Image (cartoon, rainbow, N blue to C red):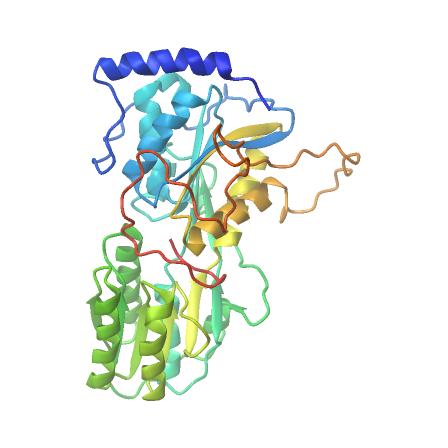
Length: 422
């Protein structure tokens, strides 16, 4: 692919010197260092490199959604790879950790790299784009407002769609001031867009209703935002009283919470599951008791629920890949900092990204098609020496990566290939 051995030897000597000087990369579990210095906001002098039309992932790592792990892995990428054009983080904290590592290692080099992430929380990703830290962030909606809307409709006696897919909003330096660019979810059989809820008649609630909400954990900013969205949306329906519980990332606690709601005789349950299989039975018990259940963000097994609402991770990953193609029309060398790769969200964000790098889902243009054989395909990273010669696929168990032995904090497990969260 590209000869790097000489560069590797030189950088190995440099890194060894830094380690002796006490400048080694932070241990896993340490707090990310605060970002300082120049941002990566594109300016009039920056031009994308010419990589011969090749989009190659030169380095990838399973960062388990954690910023400090991503920061460590970016240090490894910087020491191993002489040329990096863009960093794709599966969430904004990972992208921010990579930015921090790059600034600390070589500020001048960092200014040539573009960083993109997923989530687009107002106080994280969107702010990072406004400050020029990230070049783009792609919204992963919490679904909180839609869950409350569906709850109000169900409590008023209306029927709601079984499966509701959420779109994404792309935020870049060019459009963040205008609220970003919305992209609708993919058309899929058995699924409708969230607009379907807005098109229904306004619900009429004639009495007070108790709605139980079980959140799998509140250790992640994204889930804290989900709770805030649920509470804010419920203010529009004063008849709805919320009973909100935090399972603290414990499946057994969440199972008990659902059963407690059943015993209380709540009118409706909203659940954002920690795990798919263990929460399937408690949800079935609620359904059997005649209590509607809205499953939010991550599906349970089967379809014994009233309504599921979730984002489209393949769509979001694809938009990230298309952004890379548009920003780097002559190819790019890419670092991909993945979420927990035994989870469906990370797998789907990777799969969608590869689709985007291949140009799938791009808006049609009037440009003539390239001659056969001239369109370079996106490539996965080459296996390192000592491997079995195969690169890990999105469905394979990822190999352990040095410096990433932390336990996941978000309770990710494999679920069905439907929209799911990080």
